[in-house]
Length: 261
Image (cartoon, rainbow, N blue to C red; front, side, top):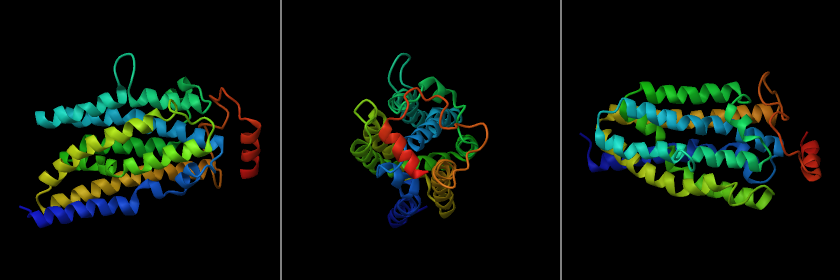
């Protein structure tokens, strides 16, 4: 059994993983939050990030399907509601599609996931499989990137509002909602991991699970950067910068894109 000191050290170890490896440090986010991303790059991010958003409730359902602890199920099922919402309205997925519309994309095209990069698809599918197949404590620990999410959402809201004409309350509703949802979710998940990682081996496994999740997030941005920033190698069969665009760039956006290219 671990002592209180072990628990505190383990908590610090988890926090250190995020401080070192969370994707807020990725160069793509530097471009996006600093207003230097072109609208093509912003739209590519919206399209690819949607695939991740759409699979989160599937990941959470996979966790619930193998959980025999009713307390854990009761606490965890709100995550599905957060993203799927009700039958007619609400939910993070719908809010993300409002962002897609705000940046000039057809929400139906985004929801089809036809434009998603292969690396995005592979990384997200690997995350869903991880949660479905790994021991429960590792599945829960992989969600603890939410410890670091409020900071990136706050930076994103401020950066998008400062630099992009599409950014308003409706467009950014997803991020504002997560400022309250993520801390609530992670409070339970963190307590669960700290309570149940009661051996050195379990702590190592939980830390590895959180590291894996940071790799999932980072690799998605690597793929975006390679395809739509530099060297600009867009794989065949994915979004080409034109499909699903229903609002064409303004003259200022077009000039910025030409300068970037």
